[in-house]
Length: 97
Image (cartoon, rainbow, N blue to C red; front, side, top):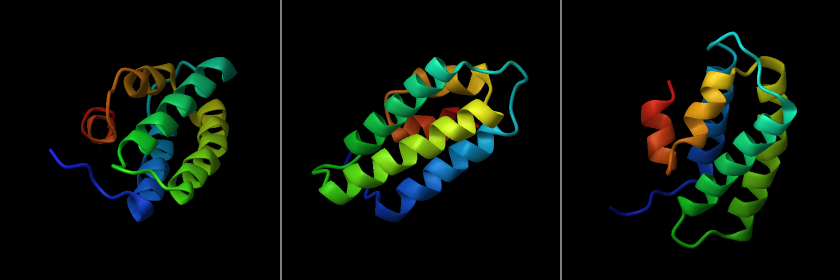
């Protein structure tokens, strides 16, 4: 399966995950769990590109801080665990709704 392009969709996916965080579950993740979540998300974001450019890496790292903030403020343990269990951005989009 060919890898997908991510420049505009990376931001959309990150925002969608943040939106999911604000609407699911009631148990709050710790800051450490949110950091693991964000690191995994950034890794998946970078791996979803065939040849990640410095722009993609910068975008991914910029999204990391936003993901941690959203996760700590509005996230759920269930959503964090769902994203951590996925092996691709396609899997996150399909399984973590």
